[in-house]
Image 1 (tube, rainbow, N blue to C red):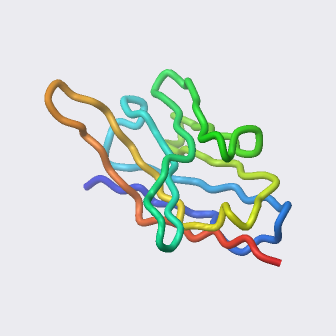
Image 2 (spheres, rainbow, N blue to C red; image 1 turned 90 degrees about the horizontal axis):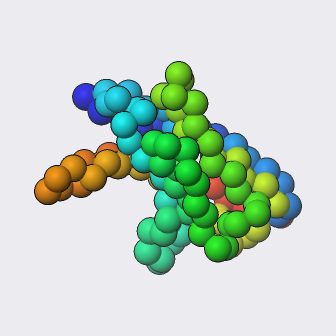
Image 3 (cartoon, rainbow, N blue to C red; image 1 turned 60 degrees about the vertical axis):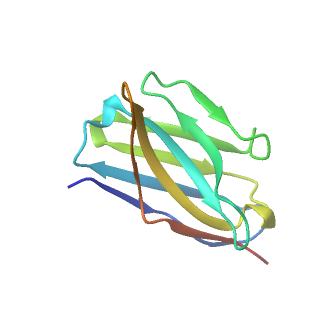
Length: 119
């Protein structure tokens, strides 16, 4: 059974920091590209950041320079360090594992972790 379990969300003041973690089990972690998405109330889910199985990273323009994605293959874990948080970063953050096979996308989602940014 594949599981992606996020943690680290919570309430933080503007300008503060949080570190999200996503522990993956049931798949070969190193075979997958890992991503963080977020969804705010009334908005579509959006890609925040991703790290490929080769450790190349990319970021949404809105978080560039403030968020850092990383992973530890030995721990089957992907992280999202979020600094200088803004109220507009508030959302449910989801972890995603994906790999493109010949004819289909093999991907999995976590249950999400809530991030609230408020004074």
